Amino acid sequence: MDKKLVFAFDVGTASLGLAARRGMEMIEAHTLLLDEEYGKRDELRKVIRAYRTRMAHQARNEYLDNLCREVGIPVLEGRKEEQKGDPRLEREFPRKDDPTQYNSYILRIMLLRGEKLEPWQVYKALHSAIQRRGFDSNVPWKNRPSQMKETDDDKDSKTAARAQKYEDDLQEAVGSNLNYHYPAYYSAYRMGLWDPKTDRINSRITHTAGGVRNEIIPRKLVEKELLALLRNAARQFPLLKGKELTVLYGPAGKAYASFYPELRREHSLKEGGENDWQGVLGQKIPRFDNRLPAACALIPRFHVARSADIAVYEATFLMKLKNMRFYRTDEAGRIQKESSLSAKEIGALLKNAREKADEIRKEAGPKEAIVKIAKAYSLNKTDWKNWLKKYADRFPATAPVPETLFQPALLNLAGQKESPAKIPVGKEENRPLPSNPLVEAPSVSGRSRYSRPAARLIRELILSGKSGEDFYKKNSGLCGQTGTLFEKFKKEDLDFLKQIKGPWDNIYIPTMPLSGDWNAIHVREEELDEKIEKLIGAQRNVLVAHRIRLFNEQLRRMIKAHGKPDQIAIEFIREDFLGEEAKKKLIKIQKDNRNAWEHTRQQAAENNIQGGGNIRKMRLLREQVNVCPYTGETLS
Image 1: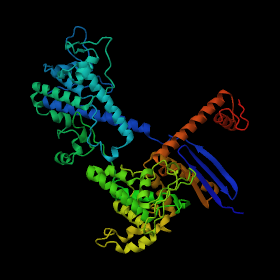
Image 2: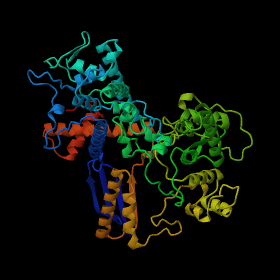
Image 3: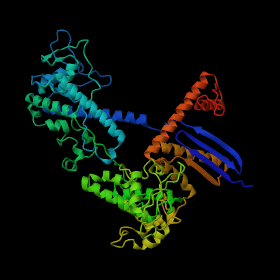
Image 4: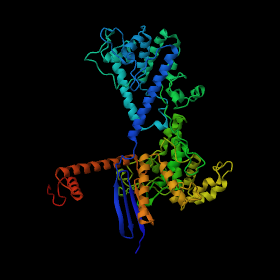
């Protein structure tokens, strides 16, 4: 009898199922249940983000304080931990019979009017005006590939709508007089401290005062008011004259200065550095893809390329086409067998994608087009159908195919000189085309796993129709030869091709072994633990890293308990194989399932029903709408 030791694992986000058998005897089987959110750092990220926001706010306050000291404006110290702050800064309303004006909004209005203030009042007005930096919907990095995410766009659009509402409300409240179109006037109006009809100022609020918190102020209004305040303050403090833009934006005198290369060189700025906090409206430039470039997964001496790169687009597109499966038909339109595209057919689809990319490039220009071009390297059911009509002169097969197997069909053109006449094979609605895109557009954010040279190699390998070993034998001798694709390659750069065994149909892109050397696949046992820990630690997704680490711990425990297995089977979900629509459907099904079980458990608890079997029966009863499927009788 076969006594092989087999381990099996089902790795998921909310559970880890594991089992072991020796021969036909089960020696271990259980499931570790996990909180599906366990391991995520969402809450920690919120804390870090809040801390950095606070640090930036303090830096802007400090920048204003230093400039005020330089031009002779006295600085009022606020409270610090247990130390009380200057009462002139902390107080907003005067004591009875005190004529002094303390309110920040009123002081800003008085300075906007050009009234002479006490030096400390000038400081308080400026200090108040910089507490809200305002929302800018047109930041210069907005169209970077890393920023182009639907969730971010949705969030920004909601914030922009709130900012626009603020501006509309301000205009409605203060009227058409542009002298009042400042945040200070609107806030004072909301608090009942200023009347737009009479232009009168009140020193105290009443019970009708409204709130002014949680407003989204447009950045342009904040800038407009600050410039006016600084110009009027310069009449009392001449050293401030001409420094308005420096106060607002720092030494460069331009918003987001470190974003622009010429200003970085001129003023020795660092993009995303602390110099971005120089200026009362300073904002740190997000540093995208600022990690040290990783080594290419196939040719380690090269660095990985950005995802938004034509070579990466094409390699990704071709691999997806290579992995696509469908049913071919014969001359009569009957299904022959499940198949995949040939190298010639993939080449024709690539040519079609390049033509679409050229059209996009002409319309948008080479630099702006790189993100939009990604859409050219996709294939939805309409593209597929049009391509079939144009190149294959065939409609998809119409024979009924199970939903789990449905794919479009294509006539094999290999070795065929002319396309045969079109043969009608059924009604439009019967074509088993997938409801989701066949090939989704490649990602435009972040970095790829491969360098540009490696991406070009992948492209040429797929288009060649040769196995990895044959491609290596044919082309390895061309390495270093001028005028060839392999001009910049060394012979050892192509070593990964030798690991791609089997015919062209079975081509896959291998993963760099733990050893880091294509010619030394196996790792010495004494180095294995260190290599595995390094691999797990390199995972950027914290949730994935946690689950892999848990799997590794359980595997080691089982080896210690039962011995080294002859075989290990692992099951896990690869969402990459699903389209966006399919992912949404899967997530909805999973969510509905969880909700249904939770509702059933609650019902069982209310009716004092216990035991997993009874709860499952209750779930079935609900799904049957309390009706027996055999007799049609109502059950209770």
